[in-house]
Image (cartoon, rainbow, N blue to C red; front, top):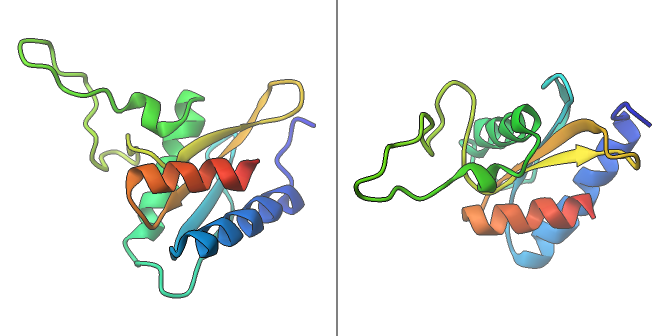
Amino acid sequence: MHDLTLHYAQRIVSQGCAAAKAAGLNAVFAILDRGAHLVTFARMDGAWLASNELAIAKARTSVMFQTPSEALNAPLQMGQPVPHFDHIHAGGLLLMGGGLPLFDGEGVLIGALGVSGGTPEQDAALARAAAA
């Protein structure tokens, strides 16, 4: 399978909503295909409206770099050059936990999931639970 199907994307969202509910969180889930186009989107009742754009930005970051968004959030170190990215939402990318690339069984990138609704660490954990 080299395409992200709607059925698979909806299954991920369903698993993510169950994990968020178990954690006592209201989250937003955005799934993009490998071209960074929206496949499905869900905002749990009570989730912050700001999380809509954040979830999409985290998914976009993960699909563009083919890595979890948290992996790109290197801490700043005094006396070292500043990376050309910032950890805030700029240009549609967001370098904090909650974005997770999705690969098929052959290791081919098929898209990405973005989650927002808790701390970056909680969002990353929800993304992993949703995609499991």
